[in-house]
Image 1 (cartoon, helix red, strand yellow):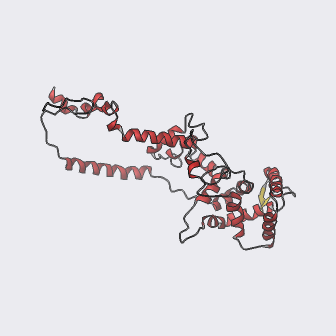
Image 2 (cartoon, rainbow, N blue to C red):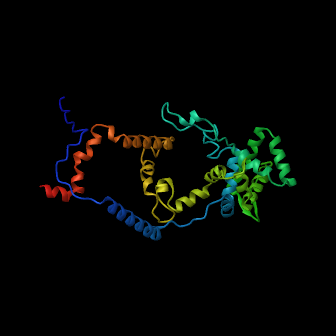
Image 3 (cartoon, rainbow, N blue to C red):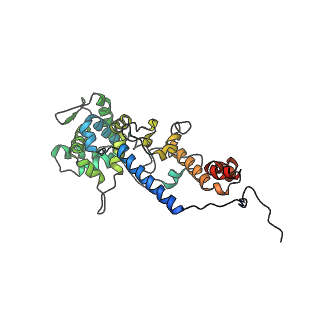
Length: 315
């Protein structure tokens, strides 16, 4: 039988040099101890600050006008969530590229109607008061055109919105029940009841924070806090911790794509970043099977730098 020919792109040459003893247990123990000590030391020096969670109560207490204006956008369907599209609703186009439309394929599987889920249902869950009951009844029995006229009148005057005496005040008399609804929801939010109403769900556990998080994302308050802490998307987002603390360095490759076109300018930026990372991850996993690419370490001869003492002794 003839000897199989040597393939430099696949086969490693047979080692014919000398051998030296190597205690892998000792070296491994030293490495673990050093890394553990460094981890503890760096955690003490650079540990992340313990920031309190932002709730709807926090938001509506600190910025009641912003909350009330956001609540209006949820009621009239002009908010970001209302127009987002799948998986929450059909209010906007799904992200994708060409024929690849995963959001469209999956469809609406977390259905959210912002007016019903964020405003009307929470208000209906509260103890009834004559004014609130009348406002809800008036809204629910009105036509869509009447509802639009009320929210439009309220929106036109919302730039002059103020908050005083525990109430939201807007200078308009043509908004029907909308002022009562928005004011009642703001008071509900400031009491903390809205947080619970949005989290409550069927079953024993109530840990689904999708709705309060989406509500928060539509307002300006959370975004302003993020920008102040250098956590905005144009500030590399999750790459940073709050303040000037170092963040999750392993996320740099994800956040990098959001800083450059076309990822930063595309309406399907999230999908494009996700797809790019899937391709890069696949290439990384398949390195041992890709001719040429798998030979880069051997051709660069970095191993000779790592084992320079050994190769120096051979020369």
